[in-house]
Each structure stands twice: as structure tokens, then as C-alpha cells.
Image (cartoon, rainbow, N blue to C red):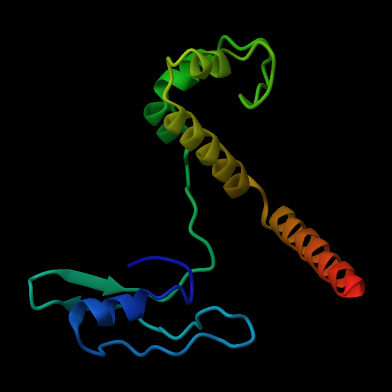
Amino acid sequence: MLGSSGVGKSTLLNNLSGETLMKTDSISTSTNKGKHITSHRELIILENGGILIDNPGMREVGIADSASGLEITFEEIIKLSRDCKYKDCTHTNEIGCRVIEAVEKGQIDIASYENYLKMEKEKAYFESTITERRKKDKDLGKIIKNYKKDINRKK
């Protein structure tokens, strides 16, 4: 199992096995989130023959080298995007976007289009530098902190 720290991978494994095989802890009262407990990788063979590997949590899971994967998975969208009016088209709100036109005409499934946009966003995030990510995270933290201050002032 692979996922973020404290999301319940070990708890799920224990529930699936019917035993307490992996150490878990309670939800943090201060953050209302799970706690990072697992410190090693372990292979568990379930009685029904299933095999699970519990891994320590990860800070983030992203896609690497997504360019060719996106081109293969969303070939029709990529092909249409070459005919967009603007070279830097984001396919979200531009007039003259061939992708948006195809979605509106039902030529491209809306779920596929939305998945494409999500993958493009994740690709851009993954390709950004660590410094850029830290700055964005810090800026978001400030926005949230100020919002909470404003809410508390109004009470």
C-alpha cells in the first residue's frame, strides 16, 4: 500500500488481515489527522492468499516523466490542442480552443477532459522546483492563517 503519512494504510491492513499486524495510533487531537507510525516496509500474506506490502507514508506522491504518458493516454486531446488558436492555450476558457469545442460538441468525454486537466496540473506542479513549491505552500499557509484570524475577529 502506498499513500501519504497517517492516512490509515496500516489500519486498513490490520482490518483486512483480522489481526493487529502493524502498529497504529489514534487520530491526533490537535490536527484531527492520523499520525505517522510505520517506519519500515513489511510484506503480509493474508489467509485468503492475498499479499500486501505496507510502506511508510510519503509526503507526496506525484507523476514523473509524464509527457509521453499524457500524449498516449490523451492522444485525441493532444491532437486537437495543436489546432487551438493560441499556442499557450490552457484548454480551460480560451476562445478558439479546439479541445473545449470538442468537449462542448460531445466529441470528447467530459470525464476524460477533466482527468486530462488534473494530470496537466499535477505535471506542472511536479515539474516546479522545490523552492517554488515551498513558496506556494508558505503563501497558502499565510492565506489560511489570515483567514482564520479574520474569522476569529468577527466572532
